[in-house]
Amino acid sequence: MLKAIDRKGNNTNMKMNTKLVAILGAAALAATTAAAKSTVETVHFSIHTALTDTGVEPGSSGNVSANEVSHGDKLNEVLTVSVAGLTANTSYSLTANTTSSGTVDLEDFTTDNNGKATLHLRAGSKVGKNVTALPDGFLFTDVTELDVVNSGSVAVLTSAGTAPTSTVYSVKKSITGDTASGTLSINATKKGTKFNLTATGLTPNTDYNLFLNGNNVQTNTTDSKGRLKITSAPTPDNPTDLTAVEVQDTSGTTVLSTTVP
Image (tube, rainbow, N blue to C red; front, side):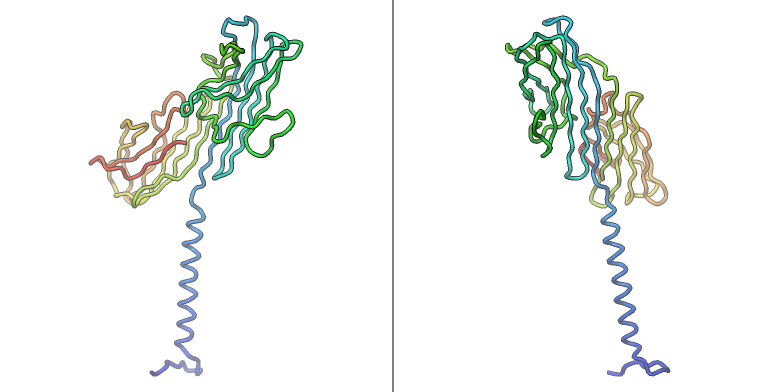
């Protein structure tokens, strides 16, 4: 087989092969970099709210501060509950009503001589003296109500019906389909909820329907490059009630979907 030799006597095939390897290597690096830039799921939820007496022990009160941050497979949760005006030196329990596990007993405690107590709970390995571990898999976004119950399992303090003094909820994650992909982000405070969904790989200049919790809420159209950009949507009044997001074409075929959070 004849080898191509340039005017300086160099092996041209070797140069071409070296250049080809460099091109292929650069392409592989670009693909790896693109994969590395895929959105890592993040969830942040925090709430500060009061506990009000149910009439069983009039004049009792409490406060709740909860914070949950997850980034990929890392989870950090902290819960602080303070109560006052309860019966002195008496046993109570802190319970949570959840959508997935029903009522969960978080901690049993005893008030001091003044009928007060402060509870510290958290997830993970940073538990120890005066800090109680939250149950495995427990998520604040799954909680609908916190109660302090007496020895007869009667709620004396509850978060039900109270308006939080502050709340923050944010979600950012990838949303995928067979050929399309994109990013979903939700940012909510007491002032309102911002919904954003961007996607690529769809049919250009085409209508798609947005479904929230299985309900068709609006129609949006892709641009000439098949990109979809949704900057607002009628989310539930309580943003944590949003559990599923789908994008369907007009024939009813789901092209993008994800659960929330």
